[in-house]
Image 1: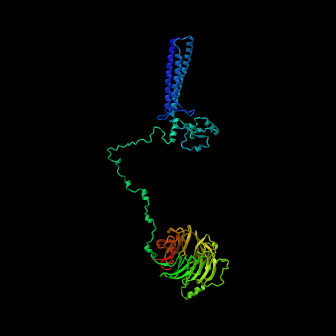
Image 2: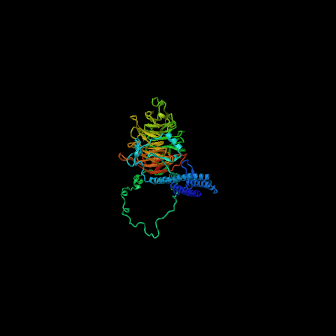
Image 3: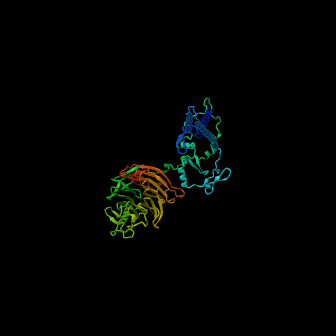
Length: 619
């Protein structure tokens, strides 16, 4: 009996040892299959059920096997060699029961081995199996209204799965501990659970690392080319012919010389005469000379200053012939354009004076005195247009006529015939511009609506057309038809002055921002040329009566002279060429050259400065 028991015990021990070794082999194979080489999981595995890390299965199996061995040895080793029948019988029953358990336990690893092999086979074959849906690059939006999502490899329709309610899906995901590893495959309409290896690759990619841990991003450079004894280049082929022949694209390129893009302007020598050098200075004013005007014959020049005086100078000698004391800053002076009426119009404050200069023969002087005589009745004009606007009065002190305005007058301009003249009052609103008739001693406002604050006005040199410049635009009116003819869009910040070409179809406009605009009214209402010449405000612009010259003066103490040729051929645009920059004036209180005028017959330019000096520039 004892021999049989010992035999059974030895058999049980061999069976136990066999089971332990098989379990260890199974656990090692599982670890090798689930955890790739080079991974960080060496001693710990991720528990998928509760999302925690536990000890590896091999250690647990070893622990359980040792426990079983100890229990078995304890049950067997408690006897001292004296066995009773009862003990034997109990031992036999226990041994028989243990044999049955051992048989079952021996069969379980075999089943696990088969399952494991099946899993390995299925894993290895996943790469070979084609995707369920074989629609290719066809957009899934095309199947939005269909009952199927695509076709399998045999051409059968793949039905769409029923959509689970969002609340149910949320509750199911909350109860599922593996939900964080599941993603939805829209292409095959199924949920896919990521493996540990895939989650590890994704985590490495999110950290900016390489997907595989054994990848070295800073591997040393390996020079694969053997440079020793290499005396020849990598290729001994001769240079191809195409490198020496221009390609078809190069032949299509247009080689343009930048110099050819510049406008071909005539030489300045061919455009002479024009003023270049200061020939004479007229000194006598104690304040800034605000305005100058040349007499029609060109023998005399008049000037008005902020010191309240008006002076008449002889052009050739620079001698001062006459002086009038007005006691108020003179804003503007203008000679009558008629050579037989040497009358000077002057604006100072709210008054406009018509002064007899005393030049001319007896007949001319007699006529001038008759024109400058005002009847005693003259007071505020009773006409509907000019009631309480101006008043004509005799000025015996200055031997002329005084026209009293209701606002400060900034400028006076004569009509070409010498009988009409206009005055501008910037703050006069609807009555800001008035037209006066010397022979009848009447005044009237223009029958047009002013759009903006007026800056200056001018008469057309040949037609009954009137120009009014506001701070933004220049409007052209027909005095006979009493309607607006054209509106010139300057695009400037603020207009400061205008001048009309002797032909009447071209206008230049100066601005407070140093820009000068040339308008060809036959061409467009937009500027034909915009010249940025002065860094500071342009105070005045002027055309020459007979020469193709125009000029601008500025607070930068300079005057620019340009060649401006206007052709009778309407198909030919005006020619504008910069000629000369005239310097010589000095700045005073931030002001420079206040006014400029051309000599009526010679290519000379007069400039009036804030330094109280008048300069004559000749060719």
